[in-house]
Length: 118
Image (cartoon, rainbow, N blue to C red):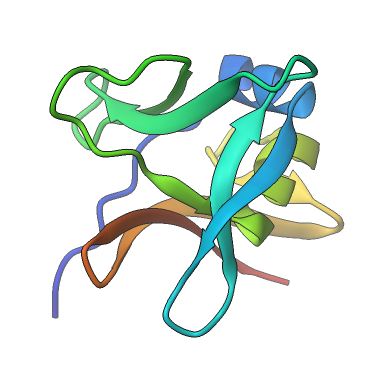
């Protein structure tokens, strides 16, 4: 069974995401919306994993480095990022439950999905 990478979330990321909206740009193989975060002007903010911890740190960037494919967000992950509060344990509290954001693959598309418990 593959080990799931768990990049770190920061208060800065959640604060930035809270001011953005989700824009669907495609669908996964089961039909769920995938997309990016956008600001009020329509500028795209791509989610990526940057160096910063042993497993990386989630960050937003307006310009992806050359050769880096975007990580598309599931709408549920975007909602947690936009509306959640970071706990001391690194989990995100959102609507009464605790979540993490995990990288995943849908075919060859890099995605970020929610993982959590009620």
